Image 1 (cartoon, rainbow, N blue to C red):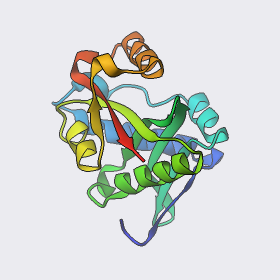
Image 2: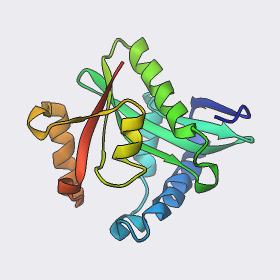
Image 3: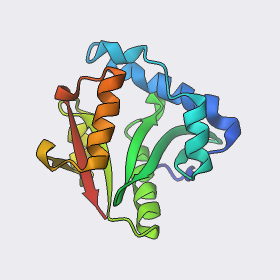
Length: 170
């Protein structure tokens, strides 16, 4: 990661900036999963709630947030709900640094793993996370908490047949 960047908890005044990062990052799905491109970013109230619980961190580069990770405790781990990097800052290991920061927070809380759900075949999704130490969780091995998240995804209209849950032991 660029040495002019630092990972830190997000501030309430940055909610709309974070929503803008999410919106810009969604543009990567043009021609891949077009229905995601115009999705509304995470609601401000959700971002504020995660922030209040310590589960929203940003990568600040050149004096402004350029990426974020949003997470919450689920069972024995921290579930990564969203991670996005502005396109102009991709391929600098900023996303990896954000995941490492979440892992440190999970370790400090005595948790055993990071978990997430992502698209199986999108290069910057499951294949990327595998390179960072995540492994697929078989559908039949989903915990009750992860199965509940899958149901939330279905209710939002996500095609879960294209997705996988993954875990990274700490």
